[in-house]
Image 1 (tube, chains in turn green, orange):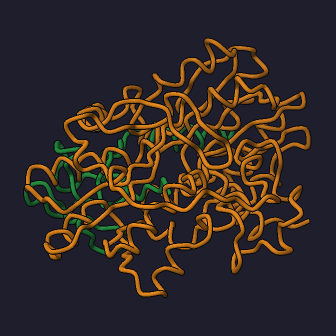
Image 2 (cartoon, rainbow over the protein chains, first blue to last red):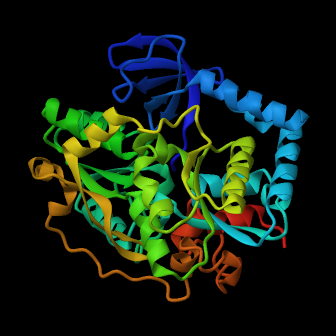
Length: 71
Length: 359
């Protein structure tokens, strides 16, 4: 029930965004993260963007894990 | 898909499993609170990657499962009066006391599946002569979306939309589990998407009052394995604290705007959890100015609540029993004939065991 799916914003019109989710475009309300811009990744839950995805943090996590795997 | 596939790397997963084995030296029981975690853990075979002495328990984090019969029975009673019911699809097959939305829809009631609270506004606007009730279930992940829908309902002066409010808060349920002392829990895998909204603050009591470690964890296999590794390290080093593994989505402060929307519309109050009972402070109740949208105010005869006496969903939700302990499991209770909600929900522990568990 608490699913959150990542998608990339391709268009914004007031409080609605068009979001690319694995190649499909979905209409998503951005009332809960109004600061987002086109190109940002957001986490989508029940038709709403609930948070902007921190790409830098994602890359840091992956880098840490890759180093751990190679160590 | 970006932010999914990278977190499913097999080599890194194996390396993480090895690190967990190297780190963890004593028998521990960790609870994954959230049903989405339970599904991911089974789907990706994570239990089989962990050392023998490490056990995972599934917790109460399935909103569909903990929605009390009475709320379903009330919505059914309203549908029989001719109101339109809008609900998330997960609720369709959940048994109420004697019926379900699916059965009622087959009888001709107007019950509609929506994937967002905002769709209920559309239904209400398109059916001005009807009264529409949205069944607002969910944890803190969903609550701000419901709050926004309620604020828009007011702003757009939609007078025929009502909300049957059955929302739940996760931290008080964790406190209730710990206070009941029925279970030995050594650490918590905390729900990532609830935490996107509430942040790390509301969980501090877990380490401060109960001396237990907890890690806010994402849902891909590498997330879960890393979260478990972080827990194992906290346990071995005896430094219980609340850590965030799921850093790409969870900020320490959560989403303050979403929290402020919730508290514009709701206040904390007691709530009933199916199979578990009342838990103080574990619900979001309407603030007075929004009471006119509360579908709980409809005067309608609701059937008395009845549960199947053999159903162990309540114990399963608290991690006290597993589905394998239930004599209904896989005999009379299966996905085609669910007796309890844990077998209906795609994230219910019984359904997950039915689908993935290999004896």
